[in-house]
Length: 275
Image (cartoon, rainbow, N blue to C red):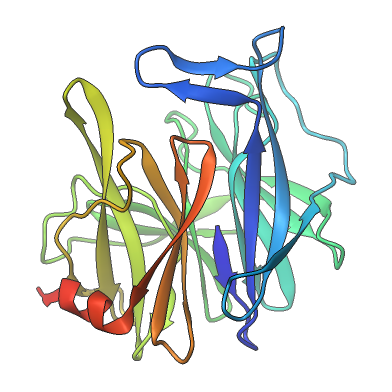
């Protein structure tokens, strides 16, 4: 994932895994017990993103495992800042009392280690994955769904979440999922979403840019596009550098390999068209 601090510094969350993904066989663990394990790191990028420092995220509180599972630790953590505090939100599998997934919010200390973990409680009858953090003024919001466009708000003490806003966009958003956190761009918000589809018997991901206003109305969007030759590409973050002249996307390729893809502002603008 990728996040731009108020002073323009670029930070991210880097996930390492013990598996490889096969389009036919699925996830294949490199460990003898066959279990899937994740370790996450904070990343601090140089201004032009050609250098970076990484630090392992250590959990300083008891890990809230609720059941035995083949999948361990939090997956797909997105790093973001709310007020003066840093958080990640990730998917827990062994943290859920049922055979399901849930979102876990982690508060980090100044060293980037976890000092508090909060189960986020919203519609526990459904599998919960990939909520998109969207700090908005003094509220911790998450993009929950695109059709209808749904924002939920979290209580940081109890983890209880409620619907903040739900409405129908002017374009059909039914197939949209994920993906990056929204960032400010020319007085509006810009983010990347994706859809998946079957192509040559392989689940394939394609990306789409969307722009929306402060009242969350989509104003511009792009056609779907691919970033790599890999069927499974998943964007987790986006950011501008060089006074908005360069636009960067961070993504995982084949659900394992981190990549950065960059566009010029001219290329970005050429992809966007009005609703």
